[in-house]
Amino acid sequence: MNDDVLICRCQEITRGEILEAIHDGATTVDGVKRRTRACMGLCQGKTCERLIQGIIAEETGKNRAEIQPQKTRMPVRPLKLSVLGGSRKDEV
Amino acid sequence: MKTLETEVAIVGAGSAGLSAACQARNAGAKVLVIDENSRPGGQLFKQIHKFFGSHEHQAGTRGYVIGQKLLKKTQDCGADVMLNSLVYGIQPEDLTMGIIQNGKNCQLHAKKIIIAAGAKENYLPFPGSTLPGVMGAGAAQTMINVNRVLPGKKIVMMGSGNVGLIVSYQLMQAGADVLGIVEGAPKIGGYGVHAGKIRRAGVPFYLGHTIKQVYGKDCVEAVEIAKVDEKFNSIEGTEMMIEADTVCMAVGLNPMTELAWMAGCQFDFIPAFGGHVPLHDWNMETTIPGVYVAGDITGVEEASTAMEEGNLAGVAAAEALGYLSEQDAAEKKAAIVERLNTLRCGPFGEGRRKFKEHQIADMEALKRGEFVGRCIEK
Image (cartoon, rainbow over all chains, first blue to last red; front, side):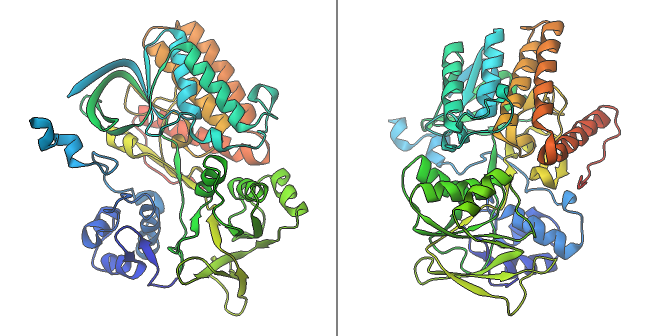
């Protein structure tokens, strides 16, 4: 497949950049994420995470079962900070 | 911050979540269903086609009618349904849930949690796949059947599973032309009944083909398809152009498992179910006591199976809370499992039943301390 194809649409990360991260030593989705920002956009990896899992398995020869999704943390969806911390307006 | 309390918290007001809610509430438990959408019913209200199966699975009834019945049942039983509310996390330490309800942050303490978060669509990358007009088949179905908007006039469908077939037919009913169904495998993936309707309408199937590239300046203008080899790579010289304005991808679904991972559940990897799926027993309880799963999150199947899994989880949660005696619960569960088995039979269902048995066997292995995460392909 063409290396210019966009894998992470939110952060505009191409297949080539994902491969580069793997060749740099990434063996997990989190490893790719930290190197490229893939999975860090608005959809939080809903679209690209599985594709990245597939590319890692293909490149490293690992079984797909071993390539887990990224570490899940709160919040599972992007939230406005004002929702969590309250806005200045709420204080007065 | 507001703190809410309930006995059974259910994430997701779709087929599985609402079924679980009715069971638990009817047994006497206090139930709160949370859904991020503005309407309950999940995917059921997009299903304008008639369902298959047996009489007790409402065969011959259209999906949205099943949805209306389920909603009525939910309202009648008195389960609380909280809409426009996002469960954004579960604390693994004490299973407190964080919820944004109408823009306000609150926390929820529940004695039992049933995660029925459903699934999301797979995506296929190719040059041009980010052009406006390329979308998931589920998105197209939402546009035509919920929002009454036609996504385009000339459609190319990628994928011939049931979603691809059903959405193609519904797009035609909505007034679009489906110019072809492209399928990588050498045969049609979905039910013959659905494929037959489309064939009779004259829509060509391009089996053993894939989308190589989509062309267009600001939106989809043409789709280049090509034959594939056994590794699904396109074969040079077999390309063909289709003038189209919309490409729909029906290339499978995958379970929305974030909350289950966050709670600390253990997983199997079952490609036929959409990838990583939480282990669970016949009570639908995961490896985290008090956390249950139901519906597509446990492995992508169908609305009918999702409802039965929801029923199981609801009964089991009510039993664990003491609202049902062991004997009453056992009788209810046996009847539900029997219905599940009738859904998981036939050329399509048999495989799903085998995978489900593997998944449950792995849960048993884990209880014995013998579980090793594995990939279940066959």
